Length: 92
Image: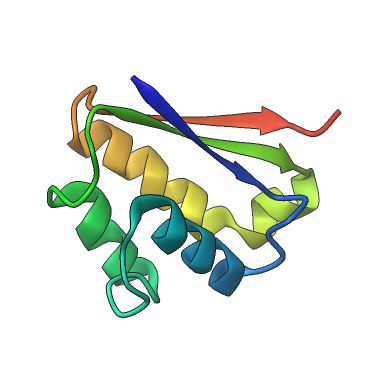
């Protein structure tokens, strides 16, 4: 299973996340520019499943700031029944 890591020392807002996500998976800005678009590409076969999404350096403050993204990936993990894993590695 391929692991795709998003470093929240480098990501300051959702626009940064969408930019990094589209680059990582070869998508267009039009496909992923909001939570609805992100949900669509994650759950409707646009990604090379199975895969693991990992968020690193995510402080408690950022966990609140990026709560909608965290919830989306938690729900996608359930929806895709083992084809997607989502993990958060906490800041030290």
